[in-house]
Amino acid sequence: MVLRSYYISKYSELIEMKCPTCQNNSTRVLDSRPVDDSRSIRRRRECEACGFRFTTFEKVEEIPLIVVKKEGTREEFNREKLLRGLIKACEKRPVALKELEDLVSEVEKELRSHGVSEVKSEAVGEMVMDRLAKIDEVAYVRFASVYRQFKDINVFIDELKELLKREQS
Image (cartoon, rainbow, N blue to C red):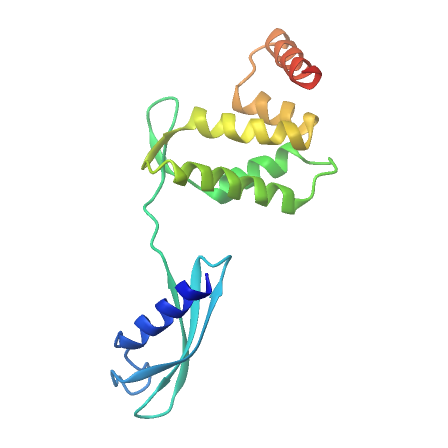
């Protein structure tokens, strides 16, 4: 990882970056460090003409991940929307926000690792429910009841039986 960071740092010094103050193209990198779990790089720069120091951030531009809904509509994957749903399912449960944020990150990472630009909402829901069942069973049932749109008590009971089967195996 250090070698990669060094290579990027050396390469970035060759890229012309305009000074925001005097618009001169000659700036140099004073400091580079990875941020956001090494998904971006923070650079401290100095203009060689006027001496102004400023910070830039480099981040890989990710291709939008599109979720195809049950009715066929499409929308961009939204981490915050998923997290809000999980928080609602875990209301008054002993589940830390960090656990839910990690769950969302795991799901997004797995989805992006498949290298596809579109994913069915059913696949996202199943990935979330598999992970949530390991964290809190009550939250799992709450999430499943909304996600699967339980129509009556029998469907709800069937889901509970399925959860018990998984727990016993």
